[in-house]
Length: 80
View: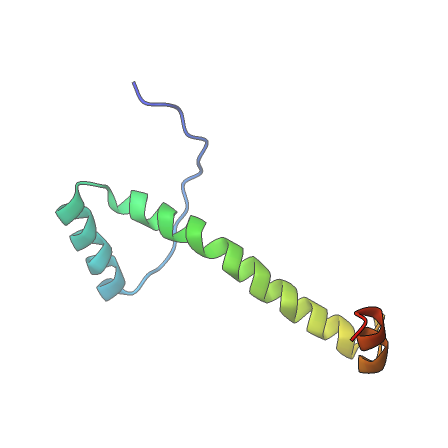
């Protein structure tokens, strides 16, 4: 028996052509469509977290919630 996986069923609506591509990939490789859905989500989440983290910082900057320094202070700090 395979190892137990802690997972939750989830329903999403996807474009038909995208699902077809995953179906074809699964058929041609012997892996399940779910395997590729999970792999794609696992590989994309770090990038999404990074991007939205940056956007949050931009919002905080615009709201005056971040401490900032001038370019001159940065250059002095870096001994440039």
